[in-house]
Length: 80
Image (cartoon, rainbow, N blue to C red):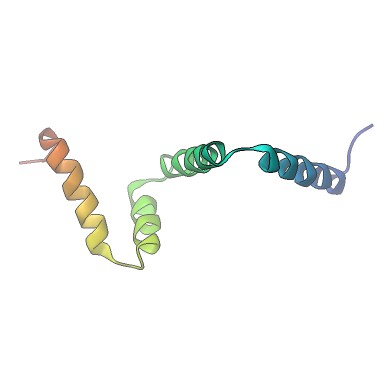
């Protein structure tokens, strides 16, 4: 039997809820982290900055801080 789109959505909703209900908090956190990380690494630099700045209430200083933090950990990345 080939399922309709509505049937697939109904079953997916039920199955996802069952899985979430049976997970512990550490597993839920790991899944959320993995999904966010997988999305952010597909962004180009402009998209990532926009996501980051939007999350930080349009505060570009936070973006500058994280870039500076990266450079302090990886000084070889600084262009002369």
